[in-house]
Image (cartoon, rainbow, N blue to C red; front, top):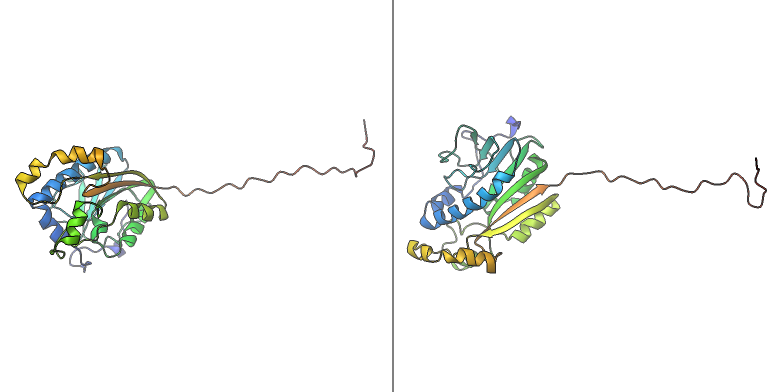
Length: 261
């Protein structure tokens, strides 16, 4: 994975306004930790099946390390707040950069993870285009997002704390994300919802509603609070042009006697 220094935004560089700080604070709450556990479980089921040489996580919404289930040894975490990522070992590099302008070369990354990055970026299309640019053919894109067609989406519509994370984000449905991916040349190989409990902050009530997880996965599998999408970058192939075989014209005119041996 080669990096392009002209796009790097490290140190004291000016970064785009993002909600990673507020989202990290929310993930430290009891509700945030419960959601994080469900999302980590979903990632643990997906990442071991994705292979390659380089894995890049674009966006750092929480202090927890999300890539420990991956078998890919070379990993990079990019975001405007990347310090203090717990659980990261020596194989992980940390970098501050714009999610819509990655300091990476074309076709150089095998797996890209976007953990709620599209929910809080002003230009989600640019983020997806950058992910498509840096992915190798047949590379995989993993997306975590908040589901607007759920109790979480209803909470966002009727809450008066719309300026606080995560309710300050733009919840986009998985169907819309899938349409965007199709336009960019991706094939969706997995789309699944997770965390079917309502967004309540009471710890005891959250434990008593644990049974909703198994019931929701069976009865209303598309109404989870968040979703995970895994898409594969389609290989651009040339369409062969078949030759138009025509019957060979006879050299002897019609009505003439053909020569014989």
